[in-house]
Image (cartoon, rainbow, N blue to C red; front, side, top):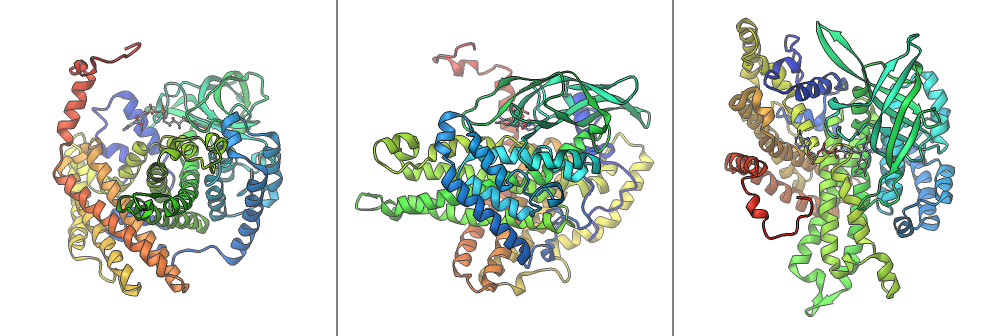
Length: 634
Ligand SMILES: Cc1cc2nc3c(=O)[nH]c(=O)nc-3n(C[C@H](O)[C@H](O)[C@H](O)COP(=O)(O)OP(=O)(O)OC[C@H]3O[C@@H](n4cnc5c(N)ncnc54)[C@H](O)[C@@H]3O)c2cc1C
């Protein structure tokens, strides 16, 4: 199927009505568009899902690592596991707000700072699947160590250098960072969170063009207070493209020892108390031109592409955390007696345990699947990774919350306090403090939903957007309309009758088959819903965030069902699938319930009333509702 159907050369930024956007929003959109990663050769599973087709051939049989990769990974993971057990104390790290130097040195000796860096540059040269499994191990144990290693190699210098670095840059920096020199990624500023177009940090070329002079301040730079080297995003002089002035953002490799780089403040947080995170100032820092990553003006592409795969680390860590919670809950709910029975036998608690187990199974299925697709190198995984990040972090947060509820008062008590009065030091409250940020950084849940929605709509915008855009000349709109009509005439019918030759259900275990077929039918229903929404709202659909969010959630559940079925089938084929079938069945049935509810809410909701109410709240109409409280500084 051609999802990226030729759209007569119309760029998305032209088919979206940007005329009524404020300057910042327009620039943000154009920057994001120009920075979009070139799609992989094989169209994305999820991208096709939103167009009404489930390409099972990409995920079923469930992709497993090669025996060689697994053996190399198992060896490293066994050593990492042993080190974490014997040499690290996550509660002490949390209490002290510092990671002991011996732990840093030990991790470096294991090669944990260069898991994916090729051996030629001093790394371990392991796969994305192994890296994800390492994140699982770390996530089950210590949020601070997870963040340290993840910020270093998922978004810090190694990842963008591996993708975009020149041979010279790789030779200069990869051996250093693989050996344990900390790296960081500096994008955020006080005025720049989710929207990088407003970036203030800037870099001007010197007269001879050999250097750039960097000035500005970056906020919340993880590892920044101890990093030897970092990737810094900065605005560089605008360029005129097609007669229009275009903002440029450029990615620089900056060394902490360069004159003018200073740590202004170490930030402290609710959790992740040993994060080496800070405000980093750049004052007239002379950065050599050869330290530009990719090219001048391509910084956002570097940042966004880095995050495309970098984003998989957090959900992998969430899988580890969820497995840890499952173990805690299993032991506690099976032992703690109240009201004449172990609490796990009370239906309200049993319900949480079942959901926790089923969600953990699905989360692992989605995440390892996407990691395996990364290793295959042919598939565009941006949407899968974004879904894993959004869904995995949100589910894990709920899992930690349920675990706290099941542990009761002990869930709220610190590990140190539990230990002091002779009970097992189970740190659920630390897990909760450490995991909340996962829904915010590396692309917040809201931004993930917008990103996924934007990509889901992309084929439609390319096909139909120009026809619906009143700002374009009539002839352009008519030509676009004719092209769109040809495509949609066949496509729309298929969304009702299904794809000839499509359908994976037949080869699956009967318990999975009905869910696989539901996923296929739902993909078509979702494609129709998106299409109808396009017709109804036209180019303004992008503003309907709540509606789009529901459709994204449906798409995510369909992906989750498909990944779960594929993984369960692989376990069935391997001869030990009974338990997998039980987990998959409960997960898929719950997921289907969520999907049906989201479709229902798409048709019947209070979205606009709530939007109006929120506007009125912001206008101060209900300040009387805040009476009767202490509100310092209000
Ligand atoms: C512990 C920690 C570590 C971090 N590490 C790094 C790092 O290493 N490097 C780095 O560069 N940054 C880092 N960050 C920054 C982090 O990535 C940002 O916090 C994140 O991008 C969100 O930006 P913001 O906090 O300014 O929120 P804002 O962008 O101000 O957003 C506030 C809220 O509004 C929502 N929102 C924003 N725009 C929209 C929209 N268009 N539609 C709907 N909702 C929207 C957001 O989802 C969020 O809920 C870190 C932050 C923390 C707290």
